[in-house]
Length: 113
Length: 110
Image (cartoon, rainbow over all chains, first blue to last red; front, side, top):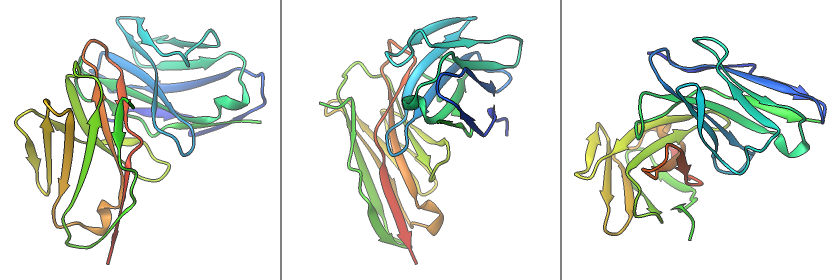
């Protein structure tokens, strides 16, 4: 069964540093997403991406965040200058269409020191 | 009112029991509904979509009541492997983002 893959599984970074989280969505999907989950809290939407542009973003997704699809397979989330409160599990997801189920990768645990 | 509200549990049930979870959502324009399961520190995994007519997948039955803005999940003949957190998830329809509930924790014991 096709799956979404994410790397790295765990990233430890000093506050103020830049991080790039990587995702390979399911190959025939066209809609891509990033979510995050702070420990003990619910999963929260960050951004959706379709047709090479952001289709929606949440209040969390401020100027420090950016997404890119640099080639036909990868989908990345960059945090420019990390803060302590960015520590969370970051999940990439992909879907085949609007209102269709989204399939999640196994996440990147980001720890900011 | 929270966008998606669930009883956090935990629900502790013996193997073989039937257990039901409920969920309410606030936005009447919501169009798509799902149940996901999440094991500890793992990703959400799609359990099933929820359709207006109700739907069943093996031991799992989902129901949707649009008038009451209420979704349910019934698990029959619980297995130890059903122990997880069950997430009620709603898509608002005019947007592509998923709104997650906080989840209901299920613990099945022998």
